[in-house]
Length: 159
Image (cartoon, rainbow, N blue to C red; front, top):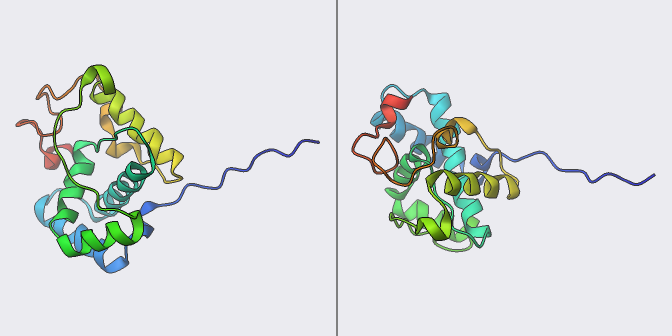
């Protein structure tokens, strides 16, 4: 009988960050978005960390969803903790560089988010699809129809 490969269960990436800093980020998000629940904020921290960890391990560019990006922004404001996390857990500093990737080379927004979710899965982390809603919408690339950096986008309305 041929042994079947065993896939270990996915890991919650929130465990990459110490409990104190996770609590600070959750509190920051709850202050910024009063309609957000603490449970959602905890899950969001995990998805942001999964995005960061997956991004350093793959050769292709990845992109956060608008919600995940809000959590990333909260972490970036704690520059010392963010820098230390990058160095100790990711092995390099992850710059936040907003911008547009060439659609011909990298695909549109939906393709980029799908690749990001695949990278998170391949890295062994839990994917919480509630934080990647773009996978359920039409293909677009930064058209200001409630996409990332859109004047119409507002996390508090989504939650």
